[in-house]
Length: 374
Ligand SMILES: [Zn+2]
Image (cartoon, rainbow, N blue to C red):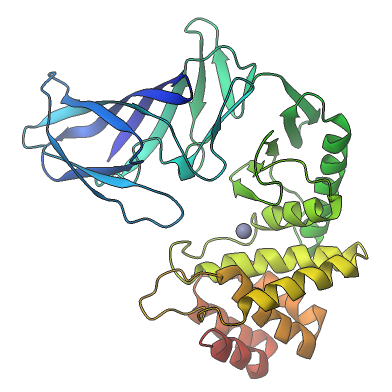
C-alpha cells in the first residue's frame, strides 16, 4: 500500500502535476498505475533521485481513456516522484478561467495503483478560484488542500462561486443563475424527502451539489457527499428526475460497477427517480422516460454478459425489466424491490433474486431470472 500526495497546477488549458507516492515500507518489484494517455510523463524517480524507465500499455478501462504505466522498479525505494503535464479530457472535464473540473473520468492522477492506495491528497496551487469543492484554503502555503473522501479525486474550482443552502445541502454554481439555482435547490429537497421516505431513512448525509457552467445538462454523477451536474436544466422536471436518481444512489449502490452487476445500482436508482415522478404527479415525465428506455432496451444485449463485463445499455435494459414487473405487480412491488436491494448482502444478482423470491414470491423472481438473459 501507499499514499499519494499531489501538487497540482493549472497550466493554460491543461495541468502540471508533481506527485509523490509514499510506500508504507520500502518497496521493490512489480509496480504499475493508470494515467490518461494525454498526460506526458516527464520523469519517474526514486527517493534517492534515480530516474526510472517505464513501459506504456493500454489501460483497457471502461468510461475513460487510460494507459497502464509499468515502472521498472528493481531498486528498493521509500517513495516515487512522478512529474507530468497535459490537457485532461473526459466526462465532465473542463478547464477555464471561470471554472476548473477534473475527475476520475479525466484519469489525471495515478490510479488503480498495483500495490493499492490508502489515501490521496491534493494541493491545488491556483489562487484565482475563490471556491474549491470539499477543499480548505491554506493561507500560509497559499494552496487549496483537498483530501479524497471517496474512491476517486474530484477537483472542482469556481472563480465566482455562489452558494444556496445551508448545513445539509450546499448548491454551488457560477454567478448569474440565481433563479435556476433556487429551482434546482427546491427540486433536490423534494427528491431527497421522497427518497428518505421510500428507503425509510430518518436522515440524509450532508451533500454538496456542484453545477458546472458548461456541460451536458442532462448528465451528472454522484460521489460520497457530492453530486455533480453538467449544468442547470431549463426543464426543471428533468432536473428533478436526475437529482432523484443521484440522491437514490445513496441507497442504491454496492454492486460491482465494472461488471454486468452494475445494472442493480442503476435500475434501482432510476426506478426510485421514476417513482418520484409519480409521487409529484408528473405522470407525463414518467411515461416519456419509460418509453425512451424501453425503446433503447429493444435490440440491446442482455444484462448478463457471458464474460461478466458491463454491457452497453445496462440502464435501459434494467429499467425495461422492472417496468414489466411494475405492470404486472404494481408500484408497491417495485418499492419493495428497491428497499430489498438497499438491505441486500452481498450485492449480487443471485443474492437479489433469492431475496426477492423469499419476500415477493417466485413470480417476480422468475421474471428477473429470465429477464437478465434476454
Ligand atoms: Zn446512476
